[in-house]
Image 1: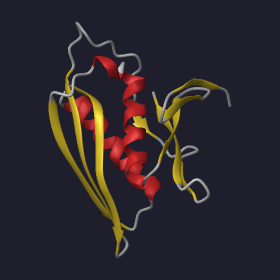
Image 2: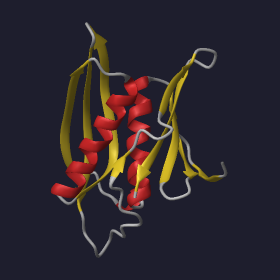
Image 3: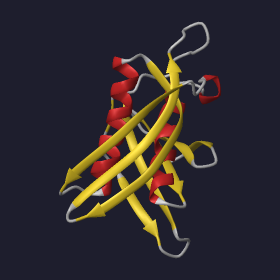
Image 4: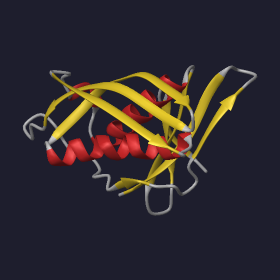
Amino acid sequence: MKKLRAFKKYKYIEHPSDTGIEFSGNTLEELFSNAAAGMFSIICDLRLIKPEETRVIKISRKGIEYEDLIVLWLERLLYLHEVESMLFSRFEVKKIVENSNNIMLDARIYGERIDFNRHEIKIAIKAPTYHTLGIEKDSIKNSWQGRIIFDV
């Protein structure tokens, strides 16, 4: 697998028919924030997106793993992108809590409505997939790593 381009907390990875990212974070919350930034960097240049509007995202599910939660998280962001014609550039996952077989995510995201005079949509992402999806904690480095492929 050839690396295309490296960034601070995520990097693009090649896939025969789709696209994907590998992402990392010092905490689980940072990992999820960086996955969202990586996904939106595929869609549009993040530097062109002003963090003018805020959305609150809360997800709570029983009986799921972190891999399921990241798919739900990214699907929710894509839904807002499509339905509200929004682009997002700042992602603050405030907390991810797991208790009694329930996982809860609380986040704030910042962005603006798409302005085709300033924003070029590079690639339209249809959905995050479970193909080669993975989230792992590196106990030695005390950090998190993930990988996800997007259907485009």
